[in-house]
Length: 208
Ligand SMILES: NC(=O)c1ccc[n+]([C@@H]2O[C@H](COP(=O)([O-])OP(=O)(O)OC[C@H]3O[C@@H](n4cnc5c(N)ncnc54)[C@H](OP(=O)(O)O)[C@@H]3O)[C@@H](O)[C@H]2O)c1
Image (cartoon, rainbow, N blue to C red):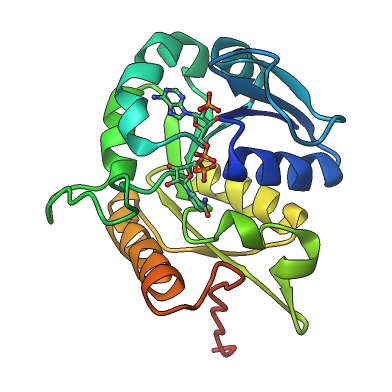
């Protein structure tokens, strides 16, 4: 599958390597096309090229940058699965509160209303997005996801599985509020309690 990634930072690079390793055709877009480091096997270009290239396009830039970056890409993203991997954070990683009535995922869906937005990968630290660290004693790191389009959720769940995560579908896009709160918890433990970023959620569900 063709995957476009907006952003060549920690998350963009790690996800691009995982998806490339799973056999997908990845193109990373950056604001300065061609300037990105990372896996030399992965193609690089502009945000516009990544948005055009991807059947699935992953947002891996700061949430606060989306309001400027996404509107010009709206037509390229039309009808596509857009994965929101962002967390609404201030510069010091503290939560940027959106209130009880919304989430970064829902706000992003408003910026690209003709796309099928799926919230995913925001609950996993980039530092843990390697084949070795996703595998925890036989259990795979959980990748919680949610969105209003069941077939888009299924597409992202399948991609997550191929990349080495254990996908957990949480339901509609409003559940992004819960997924973002999980990420805030993850960051709190990592940065304020000395837990570090080599840490993942492992969701264990007994068979019914
Ligand atoms: N790090 C994690 O563990 C983690 C885990 C899950 C989710 N997330 C979320 O994933 C997103 C990316 O995180 P990251 O850690 O990969 O960040 P990062 O390493 O700082 O990379 C951010 C990327 O966004 C670009 N960018 C920054 N400001 C921009 C702007 N104003 N306009 C356009 N592009 C801009 C950067 O481009 P330049 O290189 O040109 O600055 C870079 O490509 C964030 O929303 C974060 O909350 C992070």
